[in-house]
Length: 290
Ligand code: ADP
Ligand code: ZN
Image (tube, rainbow, N blue to C red; front, side, top):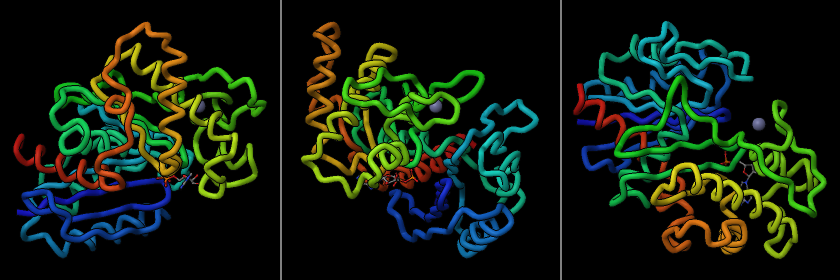
């Protein structure tokens, strides 16, 4: 029995095959171009395993329609990536493969990976953020994604500008939301440098850490999860965590007694594999539930 994983991102699709222990047996990556091109490659990849493939977990960039009763369930909806607007992603996969499929957001999938096999392994609640090209988030309680009429968009919560930051924010919708202030493109627009090219001792990292701490503060007050995980390219700056913890304490002023910060506000235990492991775990669950 093999499980399939699709992490569908705005720049690349990562497809993988896992065994029953959720060990990754093969992983490939295709650029996100048009549905016709990209999906042909995805389908070709899984076709190699058609005999043994029992289910597929899909974590997609969005916004996506996750309401099973909706006419456009399984679609990517109002994405700025025009070729993918109103694209029936799940439908295309179902047409090609007659197996149970899990369908959720890319960041929910990564959150599920951490929940099932990472920092959330022995816990019942996690909130996971990715700080990369955008900021996305997923929240899980007792194995269920927290959602309502749609999936949450916690990456767009408003943040209070740091006193040394005169950047207006780069989100086309909200300006100074978390994504507009703290995602990779906001860093580049503000400093003229990509995050990976800014030295560790640069004063900018205190500003970035402040926004991440505000996010952790809001998350604590809204959900009181057992752990808050920050992943994505920008969090490769591991030295920032210390600053995030200090800023969080300063904001919280002891109001809520959280778990010790070193275990409460963390980077992903599964590192860059959270999404793939999450999709495989969701595939396994889809098979079990079918
Ligand atoms: P995506 O969000 O597209 O899936 P990533 O999570 O890798 O991919 O995020 C890409 C963003 O992260 C880019 O804006 C990039 O500049 C930034 N980034 C990548 N590596 C680092 C790093 N080591 N330090 C800071 N920022 C980084
Ligand atoms: Zn926004």
